Length: 614
Image 1: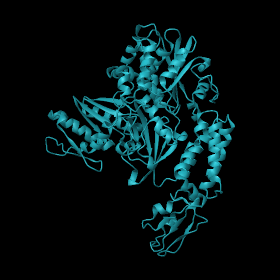
Image 2: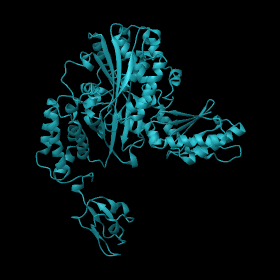
Image 3: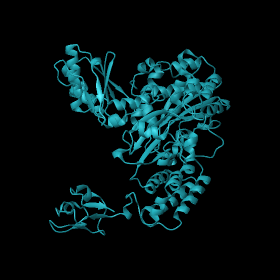
Image 4: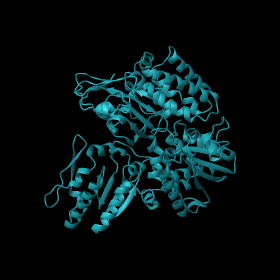
């Protein structure tokens, strides 16, 4: 019998460590012979903590597990153990409001209360709608146990690779049609071939695990849930690029804010080295390769490959002009290949299952699957992996469960702060590199920030531009000064002080920055502004008139008390931190707009819905 607890960062944040400790203590007290195991995130972050109970071939998944659930699950296990009852005879049904009603009963006829925590069938169906390649092992194996990775077929792709020529490996990646999953969508095989063709006795294989986009956590989840998959992909890449004429060394550049990912990757590298998958003469061959980890400097710009290389070298993370490209002169001036985590994670699957099977998924120009992180105003936030060619609507509604509180969908930001906002009328856009770029957004690394009807698109553009402005390395004038001027204009607009011509000036600045910036950060920084102007220009025009129809820009809205609803209870007056509300008991109160700080405390406290925003 095994109890498996999801301990990705999302699970731990929801209390998984406490739940794990509780299971250990209580199974010991009950004398139950139970193995308490760990796994990574299965993608259903909105249901964490998630616990899986395995008895023989039977398996039950419990969600939103708390201390009460621990007790009920153990009671259920104890009852079935003492009676010899098989869990496989239990069934469950899901109600429309996502709660689970169990039809299982104990031998005494009492309802099994643990079944109240069973995974709802509709959420189980969400998992079945996905196609897992990069996430194939996440949530299924213990990321700190190399044997579980090997039992799942791990390192078989490496064995197959070592029996092939490097040229055959690159040809297989080319036939698969794998594009880089870091954002640009550049053909992976082409980068590998360019690095292989470059002269040099030492070549570097680098993984970009910096992942600085707000709302993105795909790479983190892969490393936390299946670190050996990344390692195996990098080893195969090293073989294809360097063997037999050059030495190869590897580095994973992972952001320092991912301590759990770093910890599990360190364990995986150590175990792989001990088993002969890393180090000298891998698996008895004449090929050698090893890895090290570099904790990132915490700068968004280090996601750009030349800035990442500078940081790896101990310098300030700042981009440089290309050419030469890293494939010709990268880390320490040596030929270097850089891919992100998800790109490398696809490689073992391709070699093990064949390029043809990978190419069957997706569209003509975008093969395979793509991992997305769903965040924002969505019911079922978390990780999803779907074949290229699916639509945005399918991801947000069929998998993500639609918009919170039954609000209307307004837009989705794709590609992070360097991406763009895709509006409701583009919901049926096919997810592939070409189709997404035609909307003005970019695929990016895979973040999807969902917005509802109450989102101010001018404010949203300002949020993303503020991020890129602060994260600019400052090397080039267009990015350093241009984004600052744009931010000042947006601040005026949301502050109710916009000037005639501001919209046109934003467009002019955006185009100049895109044309003149040195690296991808500056070249794409105006995208959120350009796409919101393109699809939501009327909101910018409203802001010029001093109106925010989304009621989000505080300079353009006011808190008022509706006289015929106010009973004069004085609660709002007593709790107002600014002392802006006055009146007499049992008579309507009023708000002094000059004193009101628009903190919204009064409206949240009022039991009579007497305070409104207009």
